[in-house]
Length: 345
Ligand code: SAM
Ligand code: SF4
Image 1 (tube, rainbow, N blue to C red):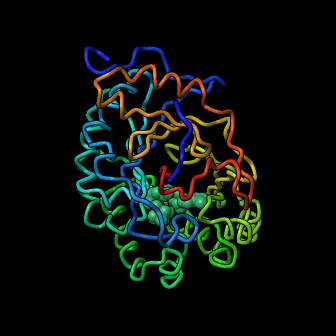
Image 2 (spheres, protein in one colour):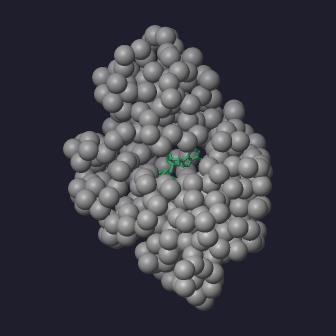
Image 3 (tube, rainbow, N blue to C red):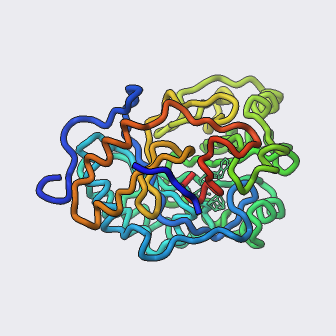
């Protein structure tokens, strides 16, 4: 266990049968695996345009090493895996990793968080490899705004093709993540909500979280999910619903009879840490008990030394904090995190 400074059966320590339960009694069954810190977009709330130091190639866990971590955790209670980044599809042949993780006994659900720019070419291979679901980031319905928020011209068209490919490949439920940015997309809250009356999409509004790279934006353009729901309710009454498969931090609502739902993810206004069921593995093999804060455990060194990972995983569970300590628009509680792309948001 160390403080981050951002800038088994016979084998290397397979898990035992006791579950992964942290010091607050939360059962951990979900691992978010970041496969790269790189991205083909530069979303205004996430990555700075320049200045991030990339991990070196040798620092990245290989696909074989990632699968070994999953193999150790599965007998300890791991059931669900999500691939994230950075942009996971910029790492070559992600479908190969998906196929390898899909074969680990005990893993029941495989999902992907993506900006969808490269999804059109990969969707069928990912589905064939065993991927169940995708979450797509889409912060506006207007082409010019998508490109401006992503700071990469031409993104909108590729994302739309990626979304279509996701639907054609049968990924369901399809969740769309919308980070709320005052003055840039908050006037589209009703348009996003209206989609759920037509399509089986699960639109999730997310409150922006402060990192070193986005302090001005998170201070000046913050929109709460309470405000988003207020604007959605102007379209019609909402009923609370359980939400689609794999629901984690979101709280869901629906227009009566609508095929889709509206979810809110409120890390700032109402933290949901008491329901936290996850840990994170960074692309360089650090196991993080919380998205924020500076606690992480190096799994790469013991992994490469052929040592047991179990004590390191147990120690990470033991120190998993009760909650995050983010403060809106301030550089405290994030553990010096520059961008969520560094840990996998
Ligand atoms: N590149 C992929 C994507 O965009 O979906 C996966 C990685 S991205 C870091 C994961 C999620 O984190 C996305 O839904 C993104 O919108 C969200 N995100 C990134 N930075 C954020 C921030 N500062 N506050 C809230 N959500 C953020
Ligand atoms: Fe890239 Fe995702 Fe961050 Fe946007 S939110 S810059 S797509 S990692």
